[in-house]
Image 1 (spheres, one colour):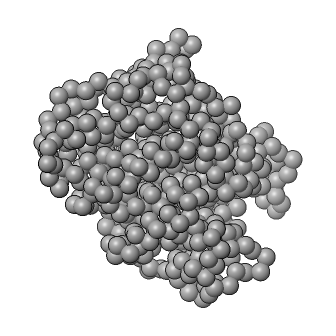
Image 2 (spheres, rainbow, N blue to C red):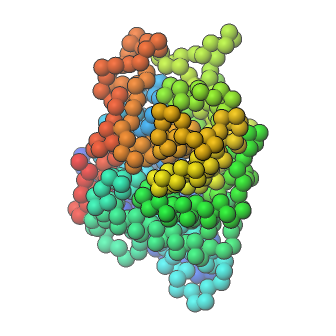
Image 3 (cartoon, rainbow, N blue to C red):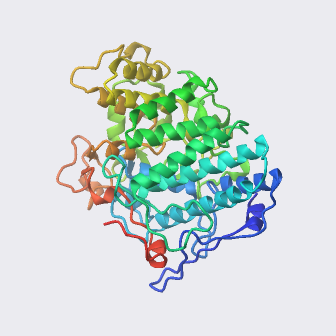
Length: 504
């Protein structure tokens, strides 16, 4: 797959680590002859899918730490209140815990690079496919998948590198690359313009895809799921409900139950909930070096296991020990049943990216699943004051997670708001799947991290006292309007594209 892609697409970006940088902007692509046949287009498109999971060369080297999905989750989840850092590290993932970002950090530079590499690849296929007269249904399916991937990548970029739509639609977004003829030097479109482009691409994708190739590829329902998510972030609640309902009513997917949920992620490609995932094979088991799981889980030798489920999340979940979602949070205990500590921090490993084929480091990460659709719809209903409907959707999740005795049954608990109920359910259900940071800030809520961990600047192991909450540290509260809730535009783009505006 990689070889075929390299034959079809030449794309090179080099950047030195010194002040004398030799870099190219995000449209640095040349195209070779692309055979306008179904097989040729399929091979090229499959190459774009492979870029989500491959370790590709960047800055002159191939680094096992660099993988789209590894950065996708780390840049989002490690900056949230769901995962705690168990030590100080020089790995750029530490910048997410501390909010101490730089334009030169390796993980954001790579993520920007590979995102636009995927976008450029699908633009190449789109250009070739749209020249075909009277395209067959299979060609239209491939074309729709391209539009979906372009929308998906642009949306993920705007979430990381720009303010939430709900905060400032006219703020600088990211660079839209929707044509191979785009100029190299191009300014950032506004957040509103990026959302409009993403929605247009996803809608077109949904209209074209009628021959699903499996959940490891985009489908009409995956495009609807993306549209539900994007419109929820945009606060177009009616549209968020509409597209979530389209997916739910398609009857292609079913919620896993309390008995089947614990195996959902280890068997993502065959799970009844999976709408779209990135499928890994046993040959793509990266082991300890470069996998998604290796930083958050270890069976003793399989991973680094340096980041854990936070005390904040565990306290929220602690109200219901019978909740089957605890199956993905695994305490490291000694022979006496005592939870072990790393540098003073209790070790609660995370297993959502483990277990495929029995491997501790292998999974096929889920990008969209049916549970999110119920929760998207519930949040949008809550914001439209549709209390009964919102709680019914939340209860649909809870009764399939072992909480049949703890349903809301149309009643908001005393001391809570309806939105709080929905967001708490989202947090538990979608934990570690790259949602939490965005759910907090787009709802203009501050991130509270009053728990022990090395996100607290200057913390030493001897300072940790688990009998009380930490106080007096900066970074305990991250304001929703802080400039550090988004990342800097990478230095590669800034130095080569004089039209781009850096984040403050």
